Length: 218
Image 1 (cartoon, helix red, strand yellow):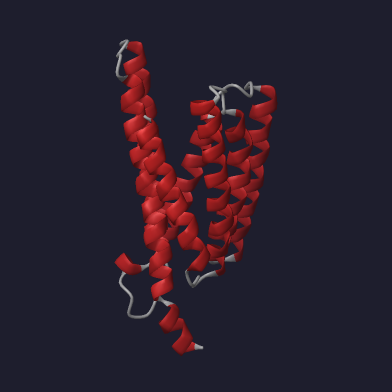
Image 2 (cartoon, one colour):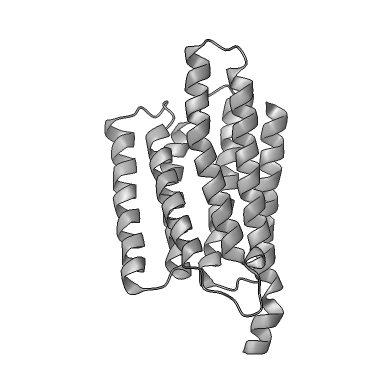
């Protein structure tokens, strides 16, 4: 399991480094160095606490989820068009942060994994990602397969959809007493994570390839 964790952290590191140096065709992409830097710090800290010191690291995610939602809201606020749509993103994000923190202090213990806030964030990200894809503004002479936002939204959709499926499978494995449930959960979860962050890398690289196009436009 540690090997899967190290591969995952390496890909998060790759995405973080990529987010720093690439050209950002849209201001919303400026959120990613902060989001990915925070993610890397949280995952490394959680890994050290869990694997090295055998300390429950779940308290980190109780605060990581609402904070990361703010960076994601910044991204979608700039990607989406329309005053009403942007206001909706901000209002929904504010409500999510309040719900997430309320669950942390009144429903969960800090030693519990915040499954409900994660699932709620996943539902919101799938919804807004699908909307972003359906209303995606084309870039002149650029295929949708080379569109930065398409790659990033695809990563969110696949990861969180897969997470919903994984939770159902894991609950079944627990109910049936499967001895390999932890391994299966680790493989699928890390695989989904790696896919999402590789999609983010692909989106950031696609954004960088637009540098010459936007340079000529300006």
